[in-house]
Amino acid sequence: MNDSSPASNRPSGRMTGGRAMAEMLRLAEAGPMFGMGGFQLLPFYDALAELGMQHFLINDERCGAFAADAYARVTNRPGICDGTLGPGATNLVTGLIEALNAGTPMVAFAGDTNRAHSWKNMTQECRQVEILRPAVKELIRIEQTSRVPELLRRAFAVATSGRPGPVVLDIPEDVCHGTHEFTAADFAIDATTLRAPARRIRPDRADTARAAALIASAKRPLILVGGGIHLSEAYEAVLALAEAQSIPVAHTMSGKGGIACTHPLSAGLFGRYSRIANELVETSDCLLVVGCKLGEIATKRYALPSKSIPLIHLEIVAEEIGRCLPAEVALWGDARAGLGDLAEALAEEGRRARSARADYVGEIPRRMAAWREEARARLDSDERPIHMARLCREFNRALPAESILVADGGFAAHWTGLLYDTKIAGRHFVPDRGLASIGYGLPGGIGAALAAPGKPVVAITGDGGFNMMLGELETARRAGVGLTLVVVNNAASGYVKALQHAMFRGRYQSSDLVEMDYAAIARAMGCNGIRVEDPNQLAGALAGGLAERGRPTVVDVIVTRDPARMLPAVDNRTVEIKQGDRVA
Ligand SMILES: Cc1ncc(C[n+]2csc(CCOP(=O)(O)OP(=O)(O)O)c2C)c(N)n1
Ligand SMILES: [Mg+2]
Image (cartoon, rainbow, N blue to C red; front, side):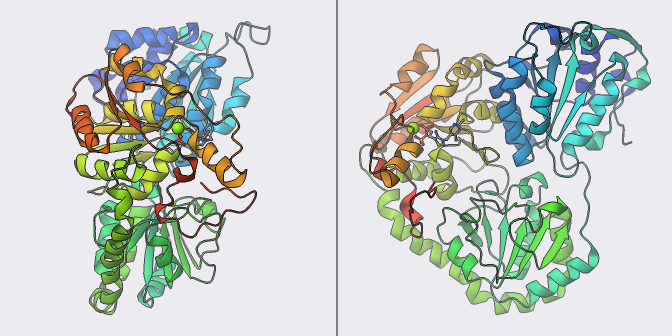
């Protein structure tokens, strides 16, 4: 075990299970935590107070899990959250599944009943272990106070190893309140498990050689990156391979930032929405898929790419390979390690490949410029209500390279996934594509802001998503985060309304929201609030939000109420709407 924790950090003596939890988190140098207390975990809370650790009360445990998820994505350190038994535990479920599906390292605590009285209709009792188990990578029930350090160690190892994910520690009240005589030796943690990826594994050498040969013989190879590129922090490796071999890179929403969107080799988003990438996928003769599950959105509901294109799939979870598309070469391993090995295997080829593919890579910036020309009217639109493409253009202008944009599950993520340009590689775009719940924007923004102090953090959410989470504005204010939250105010559950427009001849059912002034609500809650109806005021409003320190700003942006124009159709020329089909 790579245990680098100093001896002075190792307490000994009699202490509660809750105190032992806090001591282990201190050893793990865990970041800010998010939760809502209840009787069961109060010894843990008391220990946090005594040790001076950062813990934020949230107003809904789901938001605690979302905030922890965003914190983890920005830092690759496990996000920490907690809930009390019963409703606290069940409220965690949505956020835990987001983390599970996205591969976010997380350690969550759920209080549980006192075992002296379990199953006697205790207040708030439910079958939470069964409810939580499928929502996490591993659920660990702590049955003895003495085992708290050991099982926290285990939680960090599971959360950060292989494909990272959330772990729940289920802690009965008597284990948390109970005491044990601990020795200093009990408090140890493996330093390599404090950050994902804990350990890296390389693909088989023979498979790498076959993949390299396939790439070398291709005229139009293309790299497709998913969220795994961030989990593996494979930024330099992917860029080195792409540049040395002249291979463009397209990304999913989660993979945005694998290389900078502004890089000449970036082909942008592929899948359901695309600028130029889908055409490149379809005309490619070798696809290298990295850290991407090739799920519904990435494949345009399994229509893309054609099965006849040879595909190399580099993936940390062996059984994901071949699930949706057959792989000609399966590379089972860590993205960074695997890309590095490929670059090495292809090193001799570089000069020849760059000259052979000069025309091909020259196409990318040319086609991107042509796309931009075609989209210009929308990107530069002066119309009122404001065009979503114009809002994205303003983001591209206002947000400095190091900023982080958190995108909520509604249209916000689709529009910005397509039109927002990250200017440097890294996790600068954080969408909740694991479960695509609406409501992630505000709590995700809080988590990202706390993870990246000093960096500009902007979150974008629909009005529906914001309504779900209004209470967390109080959390954001109390936490003193200078987050800028952009509310896409279309007075609708826009996604649903757009589908009802397209598929049900405009018979709208339960998709309208009442007109609200979210900036006024923000001001009433002690935050900064700016309402924007004129697109020419967007730049000033965003600058105002970014300049605000120590309290959140809500920028309430009035966008189209016309359901025919809510989809990011600006580049989505190929989607055919068929009865019963999902469009966005
Ligand atoms: C928790 C949850 N419930 C329902 C959905 C389905 N859904 C996807 S987008 C959307 C509309 C959300 O409205 P809003 O947040 O205002 O975003 P808009 O689409 O209007 O931009 C809904 C209901 C979801 N993604 N998550
Ligand atoms: Mg809306």
